[in-house]
Image 1 (cartoon, rainbow, N blue to C red):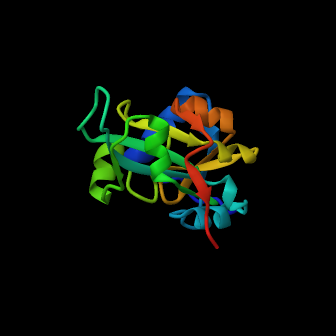
Image 2: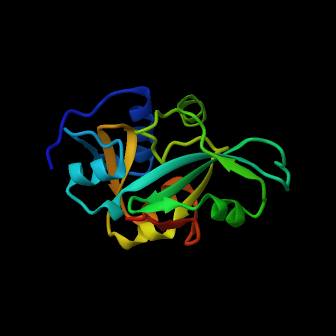
Length: 177
């Protein structure tokens, strides 16, 4: 896997700081090829697409609970060979309501990352994180690190620890052929 010079931006520094705090800075890998999608990332890393973490951002407007009627950001970490079942996300969270995909400006506002480089680490505390249990199929999983040419590798348990996310097996479906 060819490695390039590591991009140095506020977003990549934020990821680097989170990984450094966890003792994992050496896990950052700069790619010569882009990793904007799970397929691109898998090809760049020469791994199976199931080993790629897709960090999807949603806006949830709960129908019940203390946040009812408010727009709440949710990060859903899905295996690269799966797709998010948004109805299941609402059911898993147990609050009813509506869920939608925000535009690029909202994703940047909420996470500090641009689409294509949204990292699951370094997210603000107000972002709820759900983790697809299907990511546990791979010994090493790879996630964006704040840039389309920067990723990091970790184990499933490390991802859970880094994000503080809730693991569930109910939020993804296989990608249709």
